[in-house]
Image 1 (cartoon, rainbow, N blue to C red):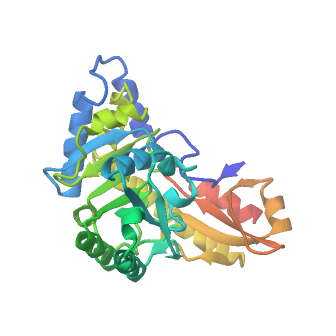
Image 2 (image 1 turned 90 degrees about the vertical axis):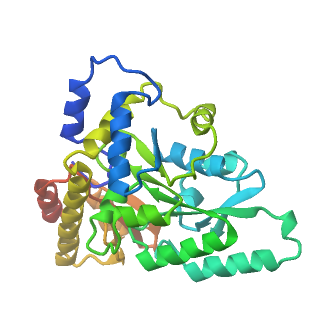
Image 3 (image 1 turned 120 degrees about the horizontal axis):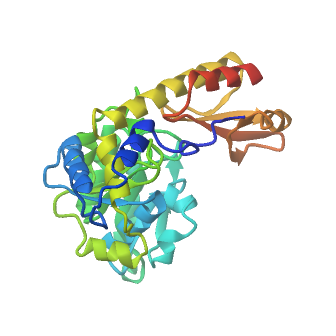
Length: 341
């Protein structure tokens, strides 16, 4: 059976596995203090164009979102996110578990609208009772979004301007960052994105690594005693080498960007296959996540031969589903899908 279920359904890119095997018997310091972690940090600083950035490695996206948000927010603050945002829907209450509210705003194609954020902030501070409310202390967004869509540079700049005006931090979840950067619709570079955000993370788990995310704080934005906070929250990996070696490999010879480019090329072929079979799209996505609408009976029959993800019910007879490409998607996978559709 061929799988398009997600972009972490296979292990790791062969170049990463090779490097992990080569370094397996090296005795290295723990908790991210080894030479490979430091090399990876330097390569990432160069890639984002921020020589003074602080770079830390965490195991997965949920840990990263929970730790970054809870350490950067004050005791009385919450995080503003699109209603469809990952922290709003698919983090099992991890953010709220730390005592910080997720303040939801409407979304359009998975994106927060800058004007909606601006309006929310104006209304919040014009309310004479706002001292009794959870203060918005951070804006969270993902790039790409949960729907595979991309904020434009102008949209991000507008959101950033609202954050600056009201003293909020801007946090960009880059779980699928590599696919966004390689999308033909992306109108900004990694350094431009890093310059707009106060903190972002470069996703590894969904972009070729076994696991791992690289958190990048612009100079001065890293919370005090951050590593202590990471450990307190149970998110510090003793064998930090596993993360450093992977990111050092991902940022050698443009592997991270090659992985992203391949997945986007496969996603474009996926679109063509769906179009050829007259399968309608649920939403237009320029990245590696593709959403289509299937008739329920046909969907159940197709599931016997191909793996994909449920997204949401459209009506009693139709369902929106998600197909995802990655570093490991092959032309043979696409040919099989084309055959069974």
